[in-house]
Amino acid sequence: MDTREWALVIFTILAQMSVGAFVILGIVHFFASREAGLEEADRLSTRALLAIGPTLALAGVASFFHLGNPINAPQAINNLATSWMSREIVLVIAFSGLGAVFAFMQWRKLASAAVRSTLAGVTAVVGLAMVYSMSQIYMLKTMPSWNSLATPLQFFVTTFLLGSLAVGAAFVANYAYVKRREPACAETQCSLLRSSVRWIALGSIVLLGIEMIAVPLQLAFLSASGVPQGAASVALMYNRYGVLLALRLAFAFVGAGIFALFLYRNSLTGGREQTLGALVYGAFTLVLAAEVLGRFIFYATHIKIGI
Amino acid sequence: MAKQLGFYFDSSICVNCKVCQVACQDKNDLPPHLRWRRVLQYGGGDWLPHPSRPGLFIPNQVFSYAVSISCNHCEKPACVEVCPTGAMTKRSDGIVFVDQNNCIGCRYCEWACPYSAPQYNDIEGVMSKCNFCMDLIDKGEKPACVSACVMRALDFGDIEELRARYGNLAAIEPLPDASITSPALVITPHRHAQASGSGTGRVLNLPEEL
Image (cartoon, rainbow over all chains, first blue to last red; front, top):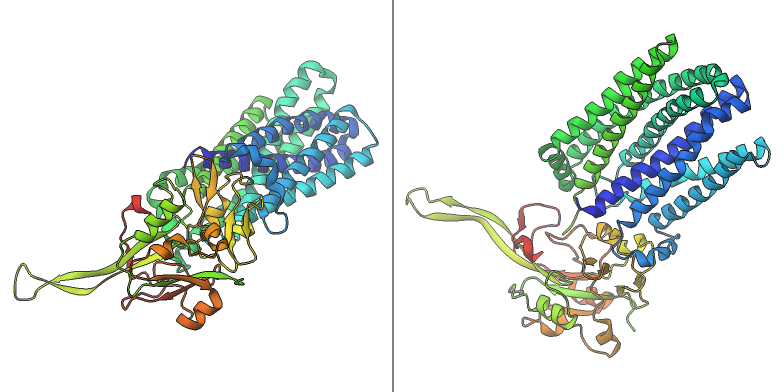
């Protein structure tokens, strides 16, 4: 692993988190406005929406560190016909552009809510297409440890797991702000926070389950596939990165499993607000660490077929 | 003009002198760590103690042979398919080359090619690869590696003509299965050549030679 591949770890994780946060935020906003009206739903979600911008910008900056000759970067969209990398870059740009326009409209309340929702829907679809194209980049015949269903599956799990917990963390920060600045709305906001965090906790437990099934299946598949380079990748994961792999699974389990379980209980029974906040931040941090470790292992253990 | 240029390599007479590799580096002015043509030594087997005479060993399936390999200017070039900029291009005569003026140095082609033909030039931050000495080809001359081979183990030409003359074999160990990229390559195997993917031996070159 060198700077180049760390750049890819940061770029893919942050870009996927941005898409996941955008999609989850849209879903939460939809249900929150049905429960408490559009104004309260906006108050819950707009600041979180604005936080996606810098995250995505950071991802974009990181992606340049992966290039040997960034001067030519504009050329990277030339081969849409066959290169998944070109497609990915176009979709990253489209998602960023549409997302920026939507965030600005939402912030300044431009156009009708229906127009804004339609734009948000289009942006979300473009974002999900971006995550898909990102995963297809790694579906190379020469890379057995990448070339399986596990890659798109893992990318989408990262997207939604990190995205939803990031949204949860942003909600908690937003709530602290609202409570100080607009105390009149604090009660409604508190109940919206609790109900959204409850669903986020539930969702992350389900996603953790998918991850915990997918990871061992992928390792078993690679070992049993009869492709020596695939088996060599598994050996590398175990021998050199075994501790990191164990940490990755443990962090994910504690963050998206145990913390999320307490979070679910806390938000359901109306437990202390500080505890809820601490649990959300803790879960997000742990899952972020787990996904970064997982992506690091992904890039550090590919072994190519051939010479 | 040829429809698809390709290389022919006769492993049965190659003596592993590496003059093709050196001629390539010389002609293309490559730094030491870039080798558009490499000669791999593949070998295996072991030595068993003599049953009655201590200190003596008997060779057991010991073999070794050389494989000179450059870019194969594949009929399905994975590098061209994945290159996001179009810098990796296939000419009408089949030659695959990289236009360094358009390359962003993302190294995606390096991941996709099972022959490690696209090689990263870390001085310029862009990819480099065998271009079949297309400047010489365009003048009607031979590629530098073919001219230099003292054993006449290398040849080039239209791949259909090469196949008609030498057969269809395009993969022996340690080369990957030819179905991945359909290389424009014909090999006459060494008598000890192992089937591609059999894993009966290993590449014996030093790591810094690869």
